Image (cartoon, rainbow, N blue to C red; front, side, top):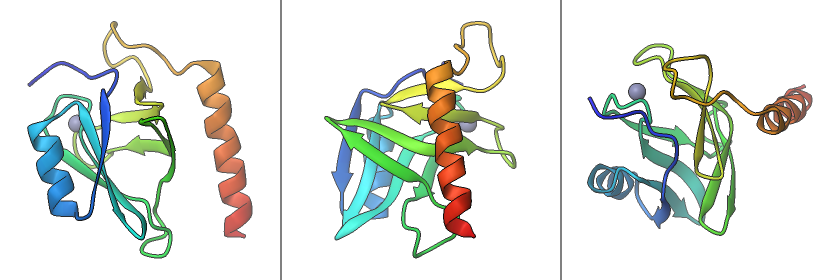
Length: 132
Ligand SMILES: [Zn+2]
């Protein structure tokens, strides 16, 4: 079990999910985006240290569960939060490659700053309006 991650260093773009999984397995400090015509998935090694590779859906046409992405100068923001209720329990927000953790999982962790929480709340309000 490795240490809890507080940020990712790099964002890579590849064409297929298998390539994304390989990229992050080799470079755990990198997040890999799958782009074929448009963004389809994000792959990252779980920041909790459990070692799992997460593959998140970014394509709203594939699944109603999707993450919104913002990419700015190799800094990635994903909204809403990632909550792995059924496995390691990691619950975090990725904002400009930084990992903001929910709850006090360890005393070295920072709690969600108010500006990130405001962004997250605004995102949820927009998301709920779109769904109706
Ligand atoms: Zn984990």
